[in-house]
Length: 113
Image 1: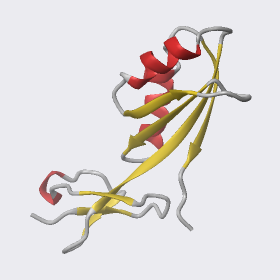
Image 2 (image 1 turned 90 degrees about the vertical axis):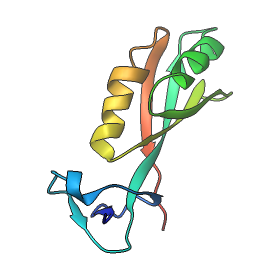
Image 3 (image 1 turned 60 degrees about the vertical axis):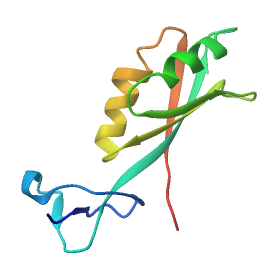
């Protein structure tokens, strides 16, 4: 069982996967290598007085690792993990932006230089 390794240099966290189930051309099977995952911070502006409610609701969504109410120009910061940038977009569009009380989001992929 060989792991998968994505070509995307932005991915840093390791996950193992089975090469026999790989159908995507974005992955290649390499011996002793592991697939990685993309982490992104999602900055969320909410309606006035809704930060705590939104943080709780967002934190329970699939793909969201944590969500915290903060002070400043954004009201909530969520940490999202997904297989690639398209999957991060799916989490943001379907899970996060569907929460009532969210006005705007800004997605910031993590890079390791």
